Image (cartoon, rainbow, N blue to C red; front, side, top):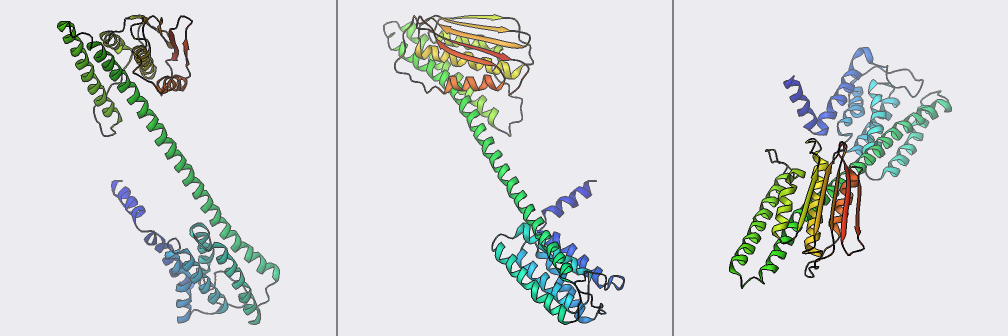
Length: 384
């Protein structure tokens, strides 16, 4: 089985002329066999002529150019047509006449330039052939000659249809590849935004707070240690993200889930944000995509709380249901906005897209007291 598979792979990797040569050789050999002489395509009612040395040359001209029918379709079609005309004029009526519709199909499928000119020239050359056969004594009626011409047109049309189908498939694959690349870039941008923004925001807030602690060395040391720890976690998370994006990474790389929320909340508290965390129910353990999205919602919401409501009371509620995970993160607006930090809005937009991809519901609204609340309902039966 392995040998057959290796032979098949070698065959498909070989040059197209190598793959087309067996058919050309087969038609040549069959046409020269005595049993098949005079049993080929017959455009006239003239009696078949016995094969001679000239017949060998005509048959070779008629069939062997099929070897280049996909590499040089125009050359193949011209030579095969010339061989076919000589075959009919010398009345050999060889089986090699089958090469003409094959060459037409190949030219219709693979000819890139001068397609209309080729069709017009071949159509124009058909009339002199019919006239020459008539002068040799052929009594074929116009209806039969027209039917044969339509058969040749049909062969070309089949090739043209194959060409258009192949082009449409190539275009479809190109669009799929573009969409895939765009989706992958979007996914990478979201992950980088979630990882980098959260940690950098925490570091900036901690560093700004440390500026006012120069008179309290013990508190300053703790604040700078928090900045260092946050930077190390940022490096660790970035390495983790690179592992996820590396297709050659062999080890099992885990993604954040609701089990990591307590650590996330504690990191935010160290950055100076008062966070109350409540978790109801237990994780099902099999809703990976839903838990990952829930984690990102809490992470982005806490990042925004640090940016825009630093010092505000922040409440995080996560409830594990039988079929969904509910997340609510809100601030009361009692803190002060950090003016040095800006946002692009990508975070909330990305969260909405993630939740909607799982057929969930997402909202982010400003409250009457100046606070902000993010709510999400994420079904656990779907996957990204």
